[in-house]
Length: 135
Image 1 (cartoon, one colour):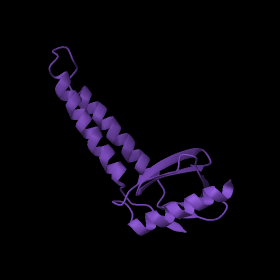
Image 2 (cartoon, helix red, strand yellow):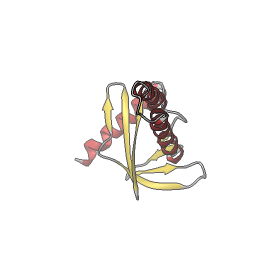
Image 3 (cartoon, helix red, strand yellow):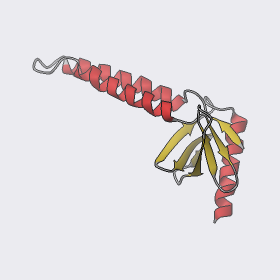
């Protein structure tokens, strides 16, 4: 089973929006203090946004699930072996997908805004069945 990950997940977009809003709010709050440095709030917001953009660039394009584990497929065509991590959860109609690869571990919150309902459901069923088989 192969799941093509969205280019920009809803969680990524919300992180960018909240980082920008927090930077602006901090800048407005600091502007009320005469001794506060100018631009510190914007710098904080910019650092959150740039961190999220760097995280997004490292994310794989797809996750290929197989019986023993999974593999991450990146934009340059390489496959990196991984395993489903302990943080993988089914939360109502959404799914938190956690994978552990050599030297890295990442999680991605997938909603119906990111993947079709049928794909989320089949992935959730596959993951729950795999978890039950492992016990």
